[in-house]
Image 1: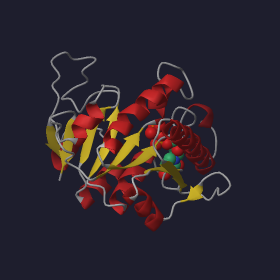
Image 2: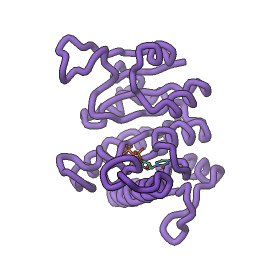
Image 3: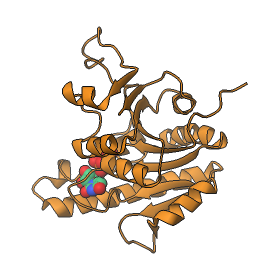
Image 4: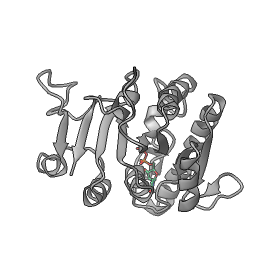
Length: 239
Ligand code: UDP
């Protein structure tokens, strides 16, 4: 028999870059399909799933095409990029048998419905996947912070930060073969060791709210499911 889920409600943070797959830009179809398969597995277990997706595969407020731009304007463009990714993700989820709803932090009502907390909670109770688009709705923030914020708001038990590496290591595992993965680490130790797990605002919010973070690889088949079952996978950051 399968291990039951250890968590009832989770907030999954996907980076925009994760959608690129091996492409240099944009959204890679087979990558998004694979990612949705992983999410479907945990939804089918009865876990309530909310998602925050970044926009770095399309636009980032502080890099590339944004250099030389007014920062706030560039950040609004970045937020709009997350709306595009959210639409693509919801579309893929709906095609693969899930029911997904996108809620935007910026009013753009002809495209997606606005974020309304009680409605998001209702959708989650109904087993729908809720995708929070447009980050926090504010410039100078990141989608990591949106993940921490929405995670706290909806009472998620865990923020799942999907990365390319399967956890937090003592050193960069691509450069140092002796690097070891931390199974768990406290917020305080992560700060003391200067481990950049999420940006400082997101990290502080999770720490204050005692909202644990699990860092794992979305590209390791079945990892999301194992994490939700409470397996020793990735790295748990705890208060
Ligand atoms: N952004 C913002 N406020 C937010 C979230 C995002 O201004 O609350 C902008 C910011 O310019 C950022 C871009 O949107 O660079 C894309 O988000 P992020 O870099 O977090 O995406 P990821 O790195 O996860 O793909």
